[in-house]
Image (cartoon, rainbow, N blue to C red; front, top):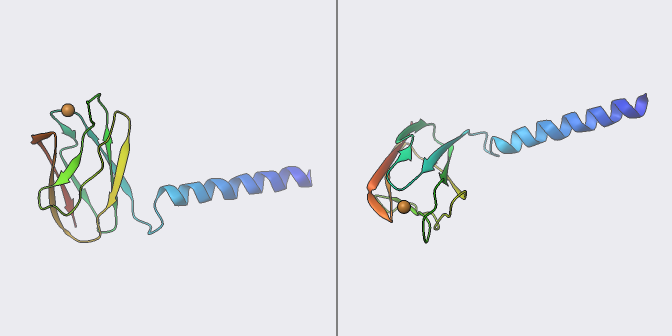
Length: 112
Ligand SMILES: [Cu+2]
């Protein structure tokens, strides 16, 4: 009986830890933006300073899709289908971005 409780307690601690890690060490939250050739979804997100945006390419693309800030402040590596790249936004502002392979495919991250 005692051993069962101990195992349950350990699993509880492990789950709490995983949840904590998933939220990010700084306590910020995370939003995901999906990328295809012609759309980023959602095209505009609002987050708080310190939050993280995960960009996920969801389609086949030779050479992958690369997320580039219009002002050059960030650039992802090329992302193949199913790959994700995360970026934390420390400062308030409006960050417009596009896909390097499709400059007409645009999105915006607004950091409050
Ligand atoms: Cu494409």
